[in-house]
Amino acid sequence: MPPTGSRSSSRSGGSRWTSISLASRLRMGKKSDKAMVKDKNQSSVSQEQQDENSSKTPEPHMCSGHFQADFIELCRRNNVTFVTPIVLRGKPQPLPSQVPEGKPEKGKDKGKAPPQPEPEPEPELTEDGEPFEPPPKTYITKGKFEYFKPTIDVEMDNPDKTDTVSEVYIRGWKIDDTMMHIFRQCWPSMDKLHTINLWHAGLTGSTVSILASFLPVCATLKNLILDGNTVKEENFGELIGEECLVQNVSLRYCSITDKGADSIGTALGSAKKSNTKLLSLNLNGNQITDVGAGHISRGLRMNRNLLCLSMSSNKIGDKGVVKLAEALSRFSLKHEEVVERRRQISEKGSPDRNKSPPLSRRAHSNDRPGSVRSNTQTEKDKSKRDKPSAKKKDAKGKDAKEDDKKGTKGKDDKAGTKKASMAADAGKTAGKSKDRKKKMTPQEQEPTEASEVINPLLEVADYMDGELWVAGNRVLINLNLSRNQVGEEGVQALLKAVQYQTTLTQLESKHSGTGLMRINLQRNPISSDSEALKKLHELMLTKDPFYKPSPTPDAEAA
Image (cartoon, rainbow, N blue to C red; front, side, top):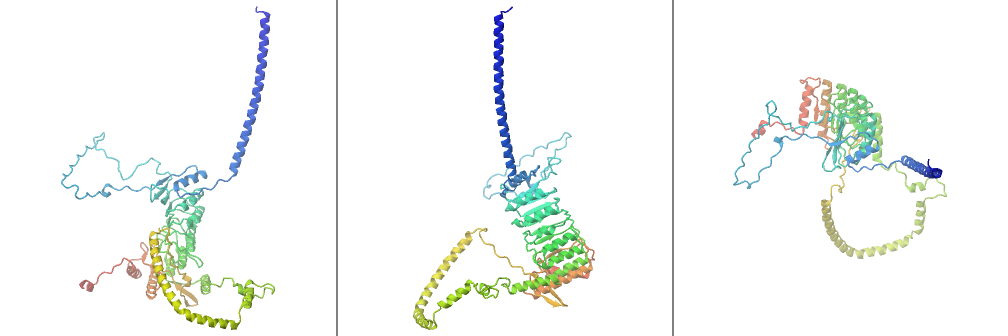
């Protein structure tokens, strides 16, 4: 049995330890409470900062012209999950026979023995003992689904510089509104971009409108190809508006009907506005009928810039071709065109008509009260008071005449020296200007002013049968109507139009255009023995710029 003193001491020690542990727990609890309070305060501050950052709108991204960097950054800002890779457009590798071999330098190989041909290595054999064929070098094989992944193919003037993208090709994947808005920010900042090709890109009416909104801002863009895009709204006319700078537009196989042809015809030209930049328009493989051809001809009436129009593989018959021929030969003005013609003639005759009257007229207006007078009127009154008398004028005039007689000789001598010095200075400045012109870069040189296009409404008109008739479009030089439904009536209308253009260009020394120089009527339901078709071919043969007449026997003898 242990002593009683030891038991009491153990009990007192245990009580001390329990009190110490309780005190330490209380202290730790207070510390943990303080830490919890701090954590709560920090979390609340961080949440407030996040709310403030979310409420602030991010700064817009300023595109630098580097297509890849700008595209990736804009995709990140628009929360695009899959960023389409931008790759160089694949080109076929040249065959070994097409690679030019270096020419041997003269004089270096003289006296040297020709190199002996190396022995051909033994061909590798397969397990079956047949010679092993190496993989072809004309193409590259890829994975199973690698070919179908969407990519943006580009061509660059310099592959080492990412800001020299000149052509963009998107093929076979849908472009939605978000992606088109990204292109809206990227493409205008690219200084070298001249071609955009969106083939089967699933365009809609909204994406076409977005594309049309920033085309005028792309200063270097010349070619726009949207083949294979069926748009329900058919608002393709927005792409060739008055402010658009694109020169070549291709809309092949876009299922364009007469509705789309109406918008395109209105965009080509009307009584009040017309496109002055478009040179070539390709509408092959659509569903345009005679009504749609009439809409296109309406645009050709007022357009004096389009050179090439292709409408192959459509549903155009004789009635549509007659409308086109009428726009190319001569036509009568409609009521709205006559009104616009009179307005333009009146503005041309009196350009100051719409300007406000001068201040002198306003000073004498009857509507103004007598107490209010203009500044010009008060200046006139002051000038009248300050005028000297007539006698003083005469005296001064006599003295001035005598002084003029005395000083004429001195002035003549001074004038001669001045002219000589001016001629010398002019020669110096001319030499300096020539040197400056040589040193000036193409960007510093000012562009020459383009020849002003004459409005067809201001041309000479003939009054016949109560209507005004003007000459038709003679700027269009290439018309493609192959694979349509053109018959004898349509060919005769085209023949008359070409004959009228030919006679008009021969009579007028200053004419606006040469008229049609090429017409394609292949694969149409018309007999090759048609007299009108033969005459048209003979007439068009002489208008071909590469035509060389066969030499006559007299010329050969000479």
